[in-house]
Length: 366
Image 1: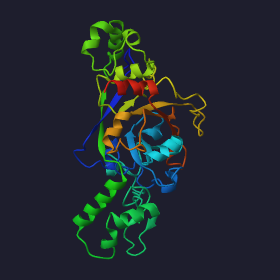
Image 2: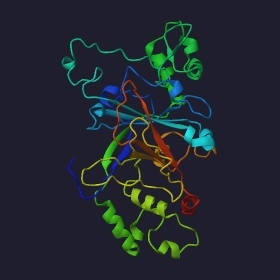
Image 3: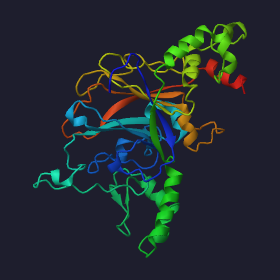
Image 4: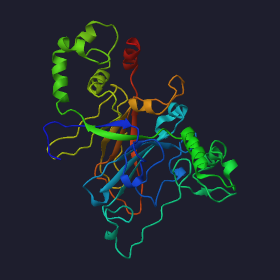
C-alpha cells in the first residue's frame, strides 16, 4: 500500500456469511467454531478455560491478518476467546478473555495455491480431531460409540442432552437429523457466526472532525452524534463530560455499525492511528502491556473491538449479569516473532468500559 499523509484505520463490519466460513478461505469472523489456520495443531480446552468458572471459553472473534515480515507470518490469524458468562467478567475480566496469535509461512504443508508445489517427500498432515460442539481439540471421545469427539466433559454433557446424542449414540440416524441436532447444540453454546468485511475509514475524517469542532454551532443541528460536540456542551448542562467519550462517539458517527477498528497499518512514513478510547479512565499503563516474552519487543495495539459487536451476540442486555464492555484492545508482538514448535502465542487484551459520565449522557438522551 502506498503511504498517505493521514493514518487510516480499517473498519470491520458484521455480515451474514454468503457461504461457509471454512479455513481454506482464511476468514475473518465473529463466533461459530474456529477456522483453524493450522489444522493439525489446534487449541486444547485447558488452554482457553475461563479462570473464574473453569469452563471452556468460546470464540468471540478471529481476524486473518497476514504480514510481510517475518516470512513465518505470511499467513497469520488472531483468535480472541471469551467466557460467555457475564458474571465471570464482573468478577475478573482479565481472567475471562484470552488472545492467541497463530501464523504460517507461505510454503507450508497445509495451504498451497498449487498442490503440485509440495515437495514429493512431504505428506499433507491429517487435521486434528475437533470437538463436535465448539471446535477445540477433541481430546475426548464418546465411550459408547467411539464416533464423536469432545474437548471437555462440559461439552460432552451438553451434546448428550441438547445435541440429542443420547438418541443417536450407537444407532442409525440420518445425517441431516444429526446435523440439525448438532447445530441446535452449538447455537446454545456458541456465539452466532458472522463474516467480518472491511472498509477503510474516510481518510479526511480527522480533518472534518477538527473543522466540526471549530464550527460546532453550524454543524450540531445536522449531527447524528449522541451529544453535541463543542464548547456549548459545557455551557448548557450541569453534568460532567468525559472528553474521550465525546471524541469516541463523534469519530464513529459516520460508520455507526462498525465493530472492529484495525490500527496496525504500518506505513513507512507515518505512525499507526492512536487507540480510540471510550473513556478518560481505565487506560492501560506501560506495566499493563508487557513486552513479548519470546523476543522482548514491545506489544503494540493491533485492533480494537467495539461494543457494537455485542448487538450480534444474542445477549439479553436486560440481565444484570449480561456480557458487556466499552471496547476491547488487542495488543500483539510488533515483530510477529516466530517461536519454533509453538503454534499459538498468547497476546494481551485490555478492556475499557464507558465511564459513568459517558453512560449518563446516553441515558439522558433516551
